[in-house]
Length: 93
Picture 1: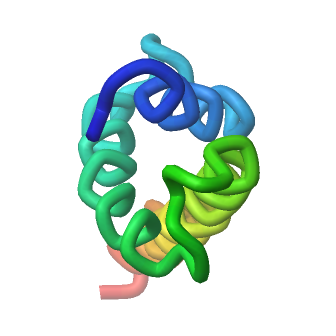
Picture 2: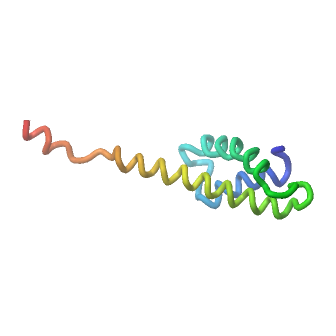
Picture 3: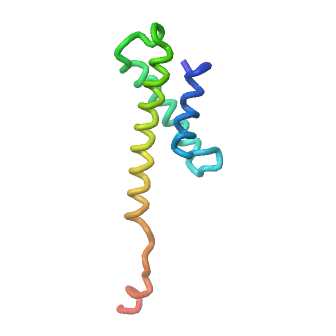
């Protein structure tokens, strides 16, 4: 399933999100894309073998959206956990 163009669209979705090999979570996002691919394959409304180019465009867009949602969720969590100025808190005790 991960041969030829199928593997290429995984990397293309990551590249479109500016997640390169130097990104700290690159391997995590690549693995997430690989896990999502069979679900996307099964959800395609037609037989992917009949219209391979339509499927590849569909799959790349679905991967992009799913990984973008995950990236946004992680950024939102990081913002909530951001370290603030705790000097004021320690000074008031």
